[in-house]
Image (tube, rainbow, N blue to C red; front, side, top):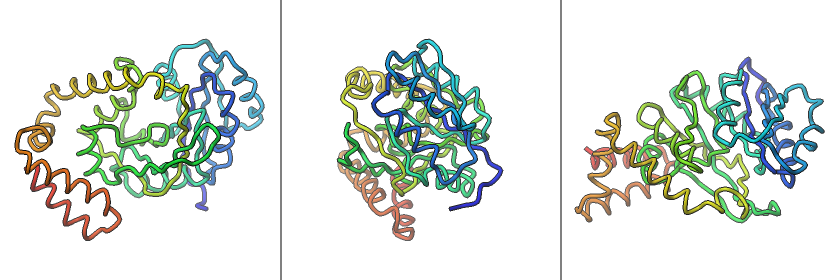
Length: 288
């Protein structure tokens, strides 16, 4: 376990009707190996017993609790960010679980890589009974994340940690695209900042059939497409998108297959630094 540095982490957790899972979720943060954090919990007008469960933890002085009427997820996330005192902000959802080493390892990664603005991690997918049903292994390096983000999210949203010093006023969520506020944020950041993932499994992401991601899947896909379309026609992204789309979208199918194959191999062999470096040269040549 690392000794606590002077760096304060702010953990932000929006809560809405999460009585079934919130105890385990809060507990997973309070037992983190890195203890120099503040924990902002905002109860966004829950109608169940979430508030009463949260109150059981308020003896821990690291918790800053706000209980108010419902204002929605995006408003709540931005409110928590505006209240944060730490230079690093960790997302957390009220139905997920963080590994005890999550904050320590993500902070170490950002301290060792000060040019990285957002870092996620690999995750176990768990069901409503907390049983592991799958593993999510995202792309690791900024190069591969940048290439793949334009074809879909590469981060598990509640698993990420932000470098607030690096992002400044760019760290905010927009309510323009309902249910894809995270993907909209990644698309806005990717042209200017680096995004990465840690290979270690540091998060347990719950698939909940009643959750937003399941009940609003169609609307989520439509809004993700809208968010991408807006970025597509933003002049700041013109050069990057032209390089990516010339491979992925134009009618040179053989070249596109090579590009996709290289991306696949990059994902598979990111742990092999020498091979990864060679493949990276191939990818950069393909998008020239």
